[in-house]
Image (cartoon, rainbow, N blue to C red; front, side):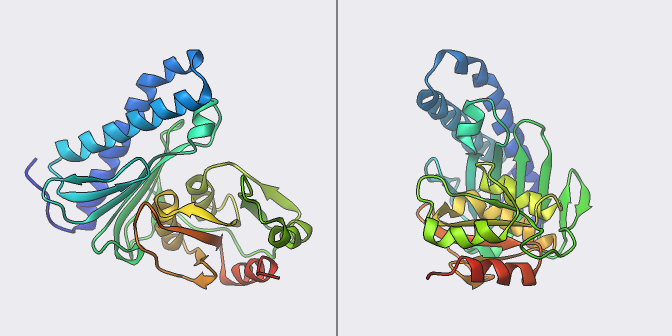
Length: 267
């Protein structure tokens, strides 16, 4: 394939799809080594294999881009659009043989979330592919998806992440108000489940979730009819860098988002 310098979203979606396939294949090749390793060492091997597969897949397709990855930034070809990636979101889950673990990839024409050209999240275990292009809706394995019908916080199925830095003073009102709470350990998985109607909302107000973790999934959520707030700003934009972190609240509809933001606001 010749060098790809254009910003056609369909071309980028194909590129991301092939890259995600390469990542899953590379992960599958190293998984048998997990039984003999400590979790920390095994996670390193998984992340390294996924990153190398991503770089090779983009290079083999003749891509010219700036890769921003949780595992390290790489200039590919002569540079160009930004590809932001978490080759494995949910590495701890994967290292312990647990679902959920996905690869998250998106391409942006201007280095911002708002400039996204195409986004893809692939489940490493099942191979299910969530994908979206701006203005064209979101799909799961090629079939259109939409968020669930509106629910209030009390009856909503809400995922959250309170690991390491829980901010209990702000999440306690949420825990008291919401009857159905889940925590899967993969932000991208949880956001795509909102997009496909499985969850109603996701809350992560630790301020540590990275752009690499959620950029692709937020585009998919938006195209499926969902909404989100970045650092309490509804629909907030952000720079696609490895260092970009945020507070994130996402929901299937604006009313539920407003309710969750009120419940988790600073005292």
